[in-house]
Image (cartoon, rainbow, N blue to C red; front, side, top):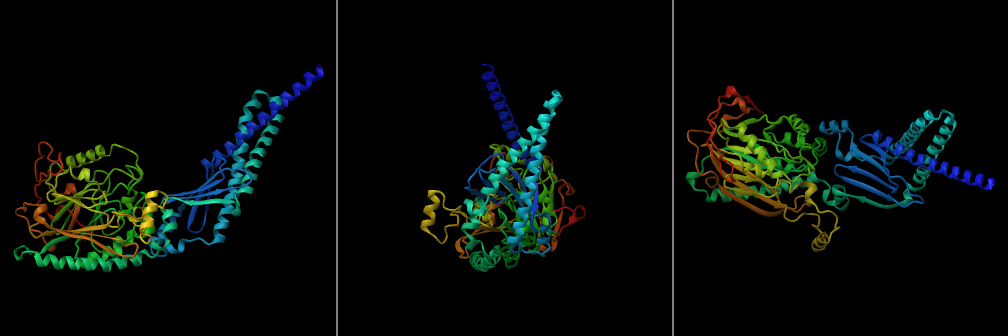
Length: 564
């Protein structure tokens, strides 16, 4: 009996030791994972960098998330391997090279030897960092036990070493056997990266297609101008004092060769952009796509308010600061609640930024936009409304007073409600919104089957822009609206051109004012312009369409600074 009891005791003790070792091995594994999560391994090529970490899962998957989509590699190996995540981004110094013209985006492709070296370096560093984290975790856990029972120090070292070895041997062996090229089960790309895979021919040579589109749009401009002159009464053909190109929702697509052609052929005095110039709120996107260079190339003032895709949080002003570095950009709200006014040939313009941001999750959008409009009304309560008030979203645009018009974007569809002008998207929503995902849904498959050549083009998202003209009496003279399709696919298709009489937008001509190109560009903080009215009682902008409009006299030049 004694022998049986002794054997039973030894078995129980052995099982207990095995359980302790197994638990400590699990703890060591989690400690190694946590170490790589808290201190990811940094590896890089000449132009790209990645922060690699181990995931607390055995799914044999490598994920490379980026701001424009994810690359996901699933492996089918003999053992389930721990997942790996590599946060990939373009290195900071690359944006400076792109901005200065010393580097083209086509040169960013790394060669295979460079990529393999970066991967090997990353794998080695992940391995030792994981091992260090596993060992330290088990030592710390068993140290408490050793302090309580100092006679067991030898056992502590043995158990810690065994657990760490198991934590390394199991996942390490699985990773070594599984993460091989011949074990790749599935390659998958999401979001914009999937569009690149499915539409490589369409995405090639966008600059060339923009130039081709410029020729097409120029013909439309010439046609509409001829029709306008034919049907405009002679007594209403006063010269234009200011001509504005209204654009919005460019979404990271460099179509500035086209915009440059419009500015030149239509004698545009300034561009007004109501936001969503980029997609993901990161200023580097503008460097990579050449947008800042494109804006500067226009050669006229570029008046801008931020949209919800131009920031990553309500207080993120990185993109505004980057835009301020472009010589011809004028920010109407360069920082929160500090407003700028600009007069173009005597036509006054103010506006305010959106406070929404990229990927925001909230259902209180209307309330937030109402608060923005209320802040704007409070800030301008002692001043007459300017001729143009610019903001991104229609809800807030309808709730602020204007002397002439409000302009907004956001909806990717042009609209007009009395003095409220809503622009469509100058690029059809940009590449992110311009193409369908690969035909994963039944609707997408049906669309692809109907028209194989244009299956990437979204239906109902035409490219659109407006030209707003003011007369020498400082009133709205004319709104000309253009929309067309299929520019990216290289086969532009006419959609619509319309000309709206200015009296339908602004029935009452302001009194005692004269505008003209001899007045030039004047800009400065709104508070530097003299207050001209007493604060109004009540709220004239509570309901859409009510403007409470009073025209603004031009301030003394000494009160402001000359803009670009």
